[in-house]
Image 1: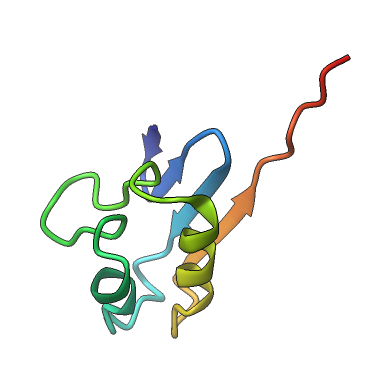
Image 2: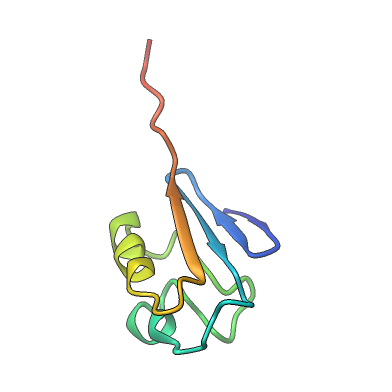
Length: 77
């Protein structure tokens, strides 16, 4: 998994976190703690569960501080 300042990527998805927007409701960590880990760096582990679960959790972010973009799947030629 590649990590750059508040940008987390794996083969399927890129997740961004905007700390200035975050209201620290901690819904992400309390509802999907295997991915959103408050006491471990990097705090987001995209390989800890399936991408659809991560997307559903990001959509529940009350502040919009978490965003995602799915990667396009390459088709075999």
